[in-house]
Length: 116
Image (cartoon, rainbow, N blue to C red; front, side, top):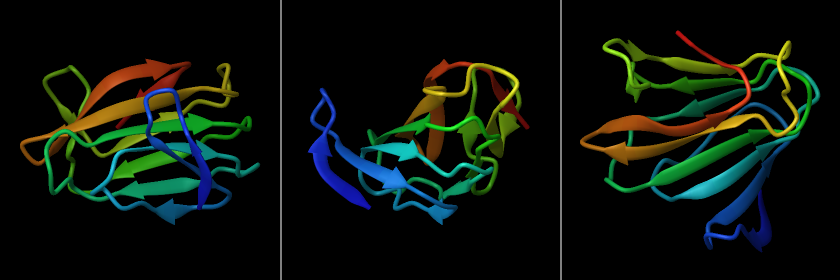
């Protein structure tokens, strides 16, 4: 749900209190506050230049599931999931991706993120 605020880049900010599927049409900052492991589904992008930032706010293994192996992490293999590792520093850990050519590309990550 929108919290009626924007981050420093002017992106809308959302709070996800449970597992959800997000709309990949619009850029945004998503703060995951679920105390247990939430699964966030990110469909394939329809437009280039959409930027999504996901931030874990609790010590849980949040799973970000990218439909159709559309996540590019900077290695030769593509991935379908990015998981925040709760053994790492999870409060504030997260990932930022940007869309291009029907794919999501990892721009940055904070904390321990495992790709599969």
